[in-house]
Length: 74
Figure 1 (cartoon, one colour):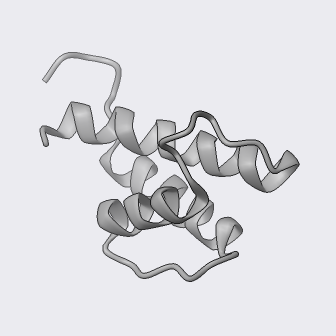
Figure 2 (cartoon, one colour):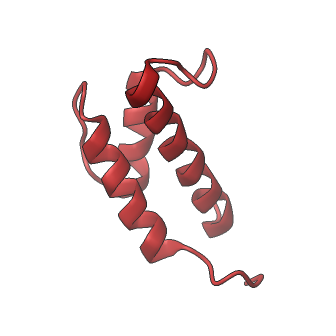
């Protein structure tokens, strides 16, 4: 996974978790809550249990802030 692909993947997972936490709706059939939490854990290096959506979102936001781009191609 390249840094740019990892960044976009982290953003997608973060917004998927936000949507599920807010209204219980999955972005698509493949993005189950368990898989989104597992992906957030894979990205951030942390472990998230069922229902820890807010913690996963916060960890992803911190990871994105650290690993984000400055708007220029690298």
